[in-house]
Amino acid sequence: MYGLLRFLKPYRFQIACVLLLIFGQTMADLYLPTLMSDIINTGVMKGDVGYIWRVGRLMMLVALGGTTASIVAALLSSRTAMGLGKDLRDAIFAHVEKFSLREFDKLGTPSLITRNTNDVTQIQMVAIIMMRMMVSAPIMCIGGLIMALSKDKGLTWILAVTLPILAAMVLLVATKGISLFRAIQKKIDKINLVVRENLEGIRVIRAFNRVNHEKQRFHEANLDLTETSIRAAQLMALLMPFMMLIMNLTTVAIIWFGGIRVDQGTLDIGNMMAFFQYAMQIMYALLMASMMFIMIPRAQASAARIHEVLATAPEIVDAPVTRNAGRERSHVEFKNVTFSYPGAEEPAIRNVSFDARPGEVTAIIGGTGSGKSTLLNLIPRFYDVDQGSVLVDGVDVREMAQEELRAKIGFVPQKAVLFSGTVAENIRYGKEDASEEEVRHAAEVAQAMDFISQLEGGFAAVVAQGGTNLSGGQKQRLSIARALVRKPEIYLFDDSFSALDFKTDARLRAALKREINGATVLIVAQRVSTVMDADRIVVLDEGRVAGIGTHRELMQTCEVYREIVSSQLSEEEIA
Ligand code: ADP
Ligand code: MG
Image 1 (cartoon, rainbow, N blue to C red):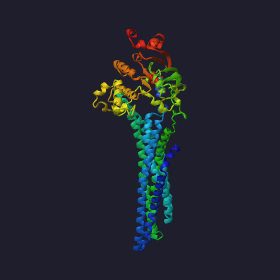
Image 2: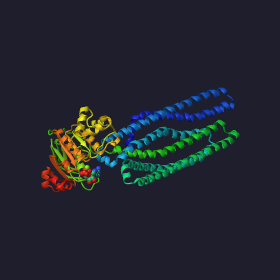
Image 3: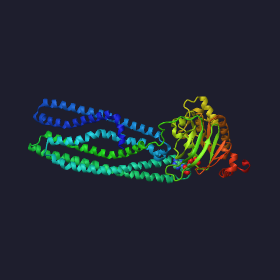
Image 4: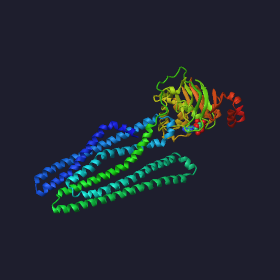
């Protein structure tokens, strides 16, 4: 966790300035009561107006200096803390971008979001408080005590009684508060989880009439948080009046016993006033210190969470020496590939070998969970294989630069992902500098023109966040167009035709065939009609290759394939 301290480095100058300013302000605060006692003792009691003016002017100057230092320190410390927060968010974001899917699986997307927002805010807050209190609280306590003693030793016993009580109280509340605030942090996480799941799954919740169940779930999490928060607030509420009571009792005691001594002539009235003010300063410093004690553990928990992200090394990194693609263009080859997800008992892909050659369409078919998506994800190196190797253009993907590898690939994921923006912007995501003509052409091949032209504004129509204003099939076609506009060497379609009707599916594949010239196409599908006319079909069954060949060959040799076909097509279609 202390690794995060490196983020303070760029701000060391500012921090030093703040600490120095606060030091100055504290010194001014400590000096003021002494000046005041001088005015009263020498000026007022002896009627020396000139002295009052002289010391009064000095007092004004000191007060002005202290206030200015305090204002500048406040500005500077806020600036520093906000800058620190910005740096942390940047660092987390940049680091997370390097993660492979394995790390996303491990840390969880919602948690990554909370870490980059809420946890950073906690750190910012504590950074401000620390900068201000770290210097002033201890100096105030110790300096105040010394100054008070220098004013009068006879009243010290009052502080000797009240300060330990106060300190004990602060300590008690702080230790109790720490565990409460830790619990609150966890409960906020829980609420976040429930809310997120609800918002994302609202359609399912409605459809299955689970609204009341979800309400109850939220209610419980909410109540839990509320109860803990109330207990924390009660504790704090208890602290305040108690502190005020002790402060007031101290005041009364000082004036009472001080008054007696003033009456006897053994104590100057100015010294008594100064003593009183120092006592207040010490108590105030203690109060502030208690705030700090409560905030630090919260920030500590946040810092640990942030550190966990930053300390997670991305598993997939470029090899120290990368190789350029070989001479064979757009060729994908699997050689005895085995891969398992972390924590899974069985490999998702087992000993898979096949070849996908340029200018041909290679289809992959298999039941759900047979490992089709997993297999495709290995090509852009979203995951690394456990055994064997995936070759692109004759080079192992682990030896290639990730950017170079992914520049070759047009990937259409199983679940279409769109970004908020216009239709054209979403298609251009595949190729930033695509001309209008290129965008239009990609949309035509993807069979998206008919619905785009119906949209208000056509290509300039707005796609809502997550593409919620489009149908599943429309989203799929846009994400296909996005891959097409890239004119990649390798096309990867992960079940991308599943939401299209048969006619559109067929038209799209026919248009695609004319489009690809020389590229390698890998189509994952569950529908036999989608893969039937592919040059080569790979049949997957529980992560294993059950057969490779054309539709005709497989019908004769592959039992698994025959089963899939007979479950989907009628007798005459098969013939
Ligand atoms: P398909 O695309 O053929 O339906 P997948 O490749 O998505 O199948 O999944 C293959 C197997 O791997 C399944 O048993 C699934 O439960 C598992 N799996 C898929 N994704 C993950 C993941 N991110 N973490 C762990 N297991 C996974
Ligand atoms: Mg899949």
